[in-house]
Structures are given as C-alpha cells and as structure tokens.
Length: 338
Image 1: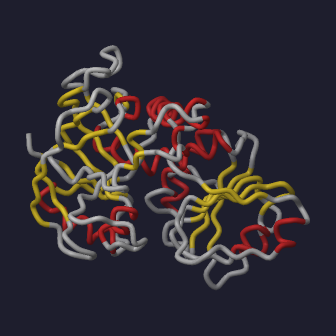
Image 2: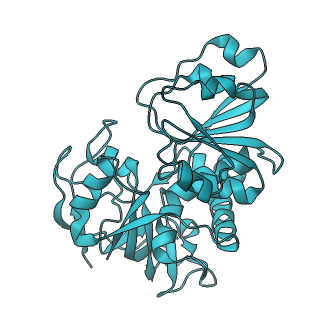
C-alpha cells in the first residue's frame, strides 16, 4: 500500500503531493491511518532545514492521531488492535536494550527513532508508520482526537519536566511564553496544585493566561516587573523559541531553583557563572517524555479535562496551515484534519 502525503522537495518549498511505499511491515511496527496531525515549530524548522539535517523529499508531522491500520507480528494484541483510536508523537521507537531504555528513559536512547528526523516520514499523510508499537498510545475516551494529536509533542514536552524535575504542588512556578507549549504548561501546573505565574512580553494574553490557570502575570517589555520578581520561583519553564536575557531569568529563581528550557533558542545560551553558582541553581533541558511519562500525561489530561486550544485545517490546506504556524499566528496549535 502506498502512503499518500504532502511533502517538501527542498528547503522552504511548498508542500506537494508525494507517494511512497513504506515496505513490508516489521514485527514491532504499526501503521496508523491519520485522522489528525498537529503542527509544531519543529515541523516548520525541518521543512525549512533550519538545523541542516532534513532529507528531501520530507513529510512533516509528528503530532499524530488516527486509527490502527495494521500491526506487526510482535505487537501485543492486548494493547493495540486494528481500528483502535491511537496517537503517537515525536519519538516512535528506540533500541529497548540499552541502559537508558531498560531504566525507562527511552526518550534519551542514543538509537531513538524520531518521527520526522533521521529519514523518517511524518503525518501530513493518509498513513504513517511507527517504528515500535510501545510508542503508540491508546487515546482515552475523554480526549478528542483533535486534542490528542498536539499532546503527543507539546503536551508530553511540558508535562514530563514536572516529573523529572520534582515539581511539587507547593512550589511557585513560572511559565515563559503563552503559545503552543506554554498554554498547556499553564493548565498542567495549575492542576498540579502550583501557584502559577505566566510571563509574556506584553499583557495581550493576560486574560487568557488567567483562564488557563495562571494566578499571576508578568509582562517583560518596557517594565521592571521581571526585576521585581527576583528570587520568587522554585521552577521556571521556558517554552519560547527565542533568545532571552538568561541571567535575568536565573535571577527570578529562589536558591536551588530550576530553569528548564523546552523551547529552542536561536543562539547559544549564555549565563554569567555567578548567576548560576552562588545559589546552586540548575539549568535543565527538556524533550518529549518516555513511554511511561507520556502515558501518565494522557491519563492526567483526561482526568483533569485539559484541552489544547486548536485551530482546525483540512489536510488539503497543509501549506496554509504550515504558513500559519511559520508566521506565529496559530492559536495555539494548528491541527490538520484528514
């Protein structure tokens, strides 16, 4: 069976129809008939070859929801069956044999299979193949498929650090950026029980941030509000793909506080040593979660009725939806509907 897709043939090129034969289904592989696919900034970056790693023709899309179309011989029938509603995301396989995989940290496996990197094709398509069935997640009944798709990158990327970095319900936390990642982080942290502050350049999104769970708001452009927040937070999550005055953000942490960066800045992150050392502060990175962390994210999302804010586009309008995201207009996740 051919997979019909929307693919870029060169950097920054318009997506065009493209078909490919995925080959024989491997024993651990799963084919998913795509019903919904979210669009992340990483998709834009890969289409535009921002990081110099894209191989063309390239099919974007790593926030995928759909139904199981076929399963390999080794797939656990108690977990996945043909016709079942499922989702998978940025990570769709790993070696399952190294120390990282065996300790439940498949997301940092050196042989990890990324859905839209390392030559793998994504979900702007009729079908897409996951490398390992264990990275394909049944969607809880309480979550609609158009909401499930963005959770498999944006959701797990902001949820997993709460587990990894030991965020507690009594902590005071701040989320930098109210976009595709940040608007979900506000909801998760509010339901986690934290006192949540949203940080944005202006007050344009203050009302929305409070609706999503923020109890406080800091506007940074043309104000001294960030300076006044010195030593206020136990945990700060940066979700923006921009360069920030990183020393200022370390300055709003309490002693031994943690700054976790899940957005991708354009330039190297520069810090003054004493901003970091004198109060034993921590800077950490974040990527989508492991198998267990992602499953926990879905369960938490369903239990607390958390929903990404989405804009729906027909799959035939993939170029328009990608440009919408490229221009920073998505509020807050563009999702393609097959």
